[in-house]
Length: 111
Length: 112
Image 1: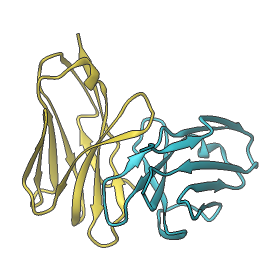
Image 2 (image 1 turned 90 degrees about the vertical axis):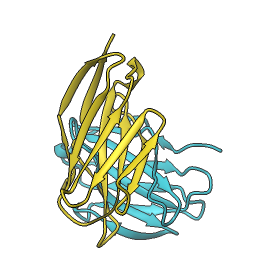
Image 3 (image 1 turned 45 degrees about the vertical axis):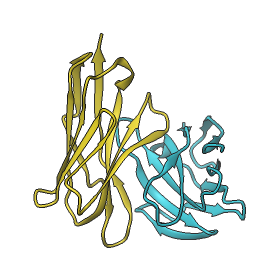
Image 4 (image 1 turned 180 degrees about the horizontal axis):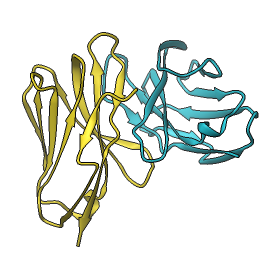
């Protein structure tokens, strides 16, 4: 079963604009992670935010976590063509440490 | 430091056959997880191995089995292949108790 649900399913923006994608989940989590996947290949870990954190930054990435709403957002600032990829949120369940991925957001950066 | 590698890259099998996929962990990583990713979906957790023992399993039938070797490399075996087993199979390694996983490029399995 997939716990995380990303929104939107697909997003197209102009290069240089900011991209925001959201993730909602259902259970109590230890942490939430975001991954990037290019062209159906391996996933690349982007950032991890723990359940007791509210916001985290890494370069052009900003992640927020609202455990009361069971949601997270990933903001990519000043988008580049190389950011074109699918982005997945993954939650680590507090009960059994299993990592569960959402269905992903397909981001397309237009030149 | 070498990354996670998987073999083969692509594989075509016939329904009912058996398949073995292989994964070499990133240097120093003692935990390996396997995922199945159907087209347009997120990865689904199959199972995880830590120090050669299965350490958690997702909602997959027993015909999906695995092994981890002393050098932390791993195999995923699937028996009695079904058409729905067609997917990208991803291996990820990590350090125990670290949630950050390093993924290999995947093996694309097609069952006809």
